[in-house]
Image (tube, rainbow, N blue to C red; front, side):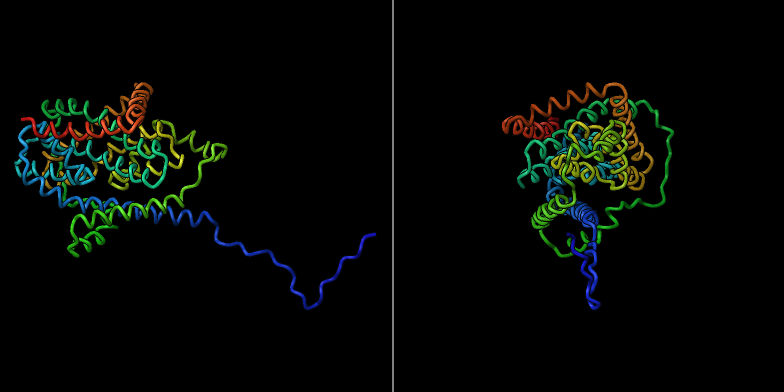
Length: 369
């Protein structure tokens, strides 16, 4: 026998549904935005802290051949933890008549080879925080290998373009500099730190601490990868195509005007499983092209049409070879790079040998006359 429904007292408050709080995805987006800003600030602090030591080295080295300038730009990018300031220095040297057009060209190439080291550096810090070794460090190795595989052959194509007179009649002028988004946001902070008179090593240490904070924020923002989630599967089918990733790398670096930022962000994405390592190769190739945008403008302003032509030739050479690889030889290129990367990170010894080679080669290029 069923009991009749009990009526609520007249003064009773009817039950209400619990209030919906702020959706979790809002906090994730906020953490992602703040994490990216802190991440970029960390890279800028690392670069500013390292500049002090770079200037000291410039005073003592004598660059007299194209090979010397290649090694010089390569090593200087290691010290600056960025390729853009080294490329700007190359343009300034050329404008002042200190180096020849070919030396400026090879020095800019060296700056891009050395700039990939920041990705390996970031991956090492990420590994030290307890993440999987292969996922954290392999992106840096892939960045170095992919950059070298494109830029070294581009030297020959660039040499022909510069010496053949193809761009001899090119005359371009500029009236105002280009300010990147990064400069607009972070220059006031960096200027304040510079005015404070902090030693370079303190700023460098502050950059490392900021980098750790950025990784903590990004870890909170990035979702866990689940192969069964149809959303990730749909994104994977669309974005992980070589040409799509190539265009994405071009776009991200065009916005940030920093290949260090656009490539280093791959480290936490790979460690979280959101990006497969083999899918990052086209992204790296695209980022290595549009990273010249700020250098193009700097060359035009500081060195005039001749310097602009040098940087344009570099950009065209890298773009042509990258597109040839993507359109006709990508699968073979991918297998070769990935197999080499696996051999390098297989043991600590092979990784150490690789790092030694990456240090010794530019030193030899710099010292051999």
